[in-house]
Image 1: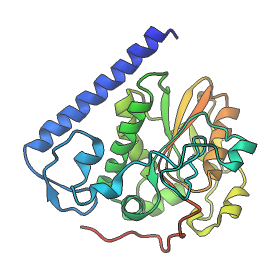
Image 2: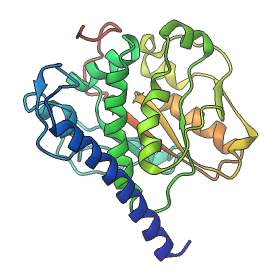
Image 3: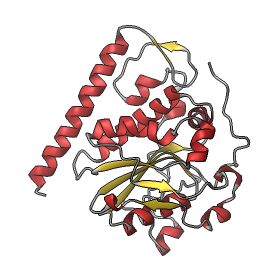
Length: 275
């Protein structure tokens, strides 16, 4: 594709996402809305996704991580203002995906919002997370080739029945809308139910067998693989490898939060109860 064509695509994405944000902003400015985190009412006064979703009191807890991480796998460093440089593992072996995008670190209020969507079935929380990811994806792909499809990391049917919704599918919808591409939740599936990864340590997660199967329809597609949380990257690596083995042209990854080995492991599976 020519540079002119790429710029046209980027301009289209910016325009489409800008119109979406503009409509959302215009609607929200008519009256106050409730903060996606604390549920207190507030009036949005800026156009950014986070500024539209979170009240001034909660907003500082939802700032995007801009430094201090590995550009290949997102592994956060102890210092949040450290340079963006490869981690030791990625210097030895790069992950199977091309690009890795994430919003923030899996801790604090961002973790609570993810837990509320994942385990309490809050569609509002999942939609809010999807809007955060939509903004960073629209920004990232504004000057380059856009993926052909968004593929949410799938749940096994047994897990889906247990939770009542697919959190990654719900988060993928705003991303797909912002990029002007379809969500394809039929390209990748889980072959068998697995032990919840929240019960496994980093080493056990890395030793998991291939839990996925990909459709031949993945062949030739540039895929944006979406998940809620990346802990070690083991599950995402297996999903990306499965898609590439099925003939996908490339795989990029986007997640709402990246866990840090420098943080204390969270206890429990449910976040703070909010109305």
